[in-house]
Length: 107
Image (cartoon, rainbow, N blue to C red; front, side, top):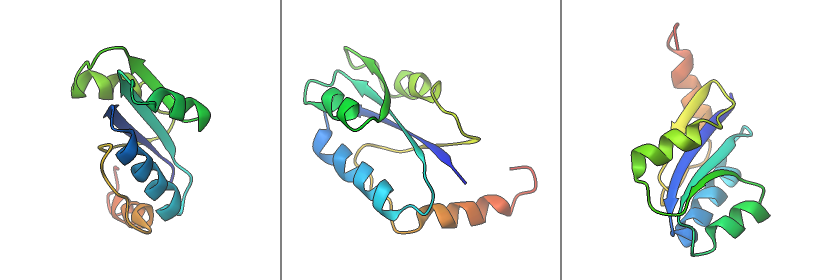
């Protein structure tokens, strides 16, 4: 089960790196990570480009809702998951998510 993980961020590169690392380390499936970078004066734009992470960008902070909507336009999976840039994904999180989703006939 592949998921598009939408992450709005506003000059929080230190924690964003931690989040992305936890997704890559603790996922059993390959997921699409999409950022919306508000401003990005802390190096977030450069980081996303260097690491080939999909993103949308605004030069100013456009707020959470607009950020999520812009980034979600790039989603290419059937499932979209919203995450904050300071979250941590635990081991096998996606295995447990898949198990829960399968419980519903019309997921």
